[in-house]
Image (tube, rainbow, N blue to C red; front, side, top):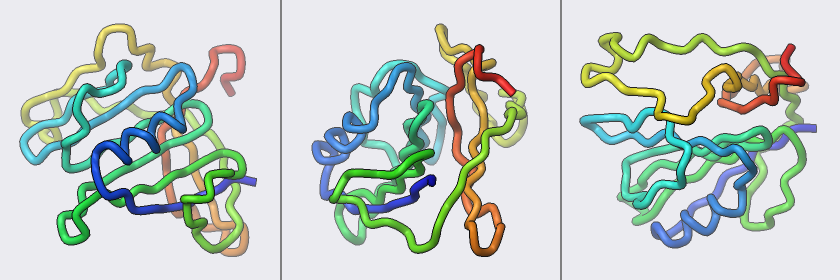
Length: 154
């Protein structure tokens, strides 16, 4: 059964520790500021002082967003299996997940006025979407990015 959970962290140091607990190879990152996006990165970011971002790999997608009112970061963790981290508060309900091919945006669309790039070394053919569906309502509530091995492609 899949899991979805959330937490609050107070600063970049705690955010970095939480993110490093969810690393599996390969892990990719995507960072957002009001004026630009990073593109898909393969290296752990030097600084996490961005408005929001995400880490994704075959097991997890971790999303974080700066929360100035609470002086820290709101964090959402989407996992294809059970989460064992006691600092995370599970979202109610039972969840199942299903992986699907992804449609990548053209980096030059108006959605990204400054454009963005798929950084060197990123194999975009391995990036998929993972749909998280509530078992009781059958509604897809979250769509996460994930990484698949070529051998396990659908």
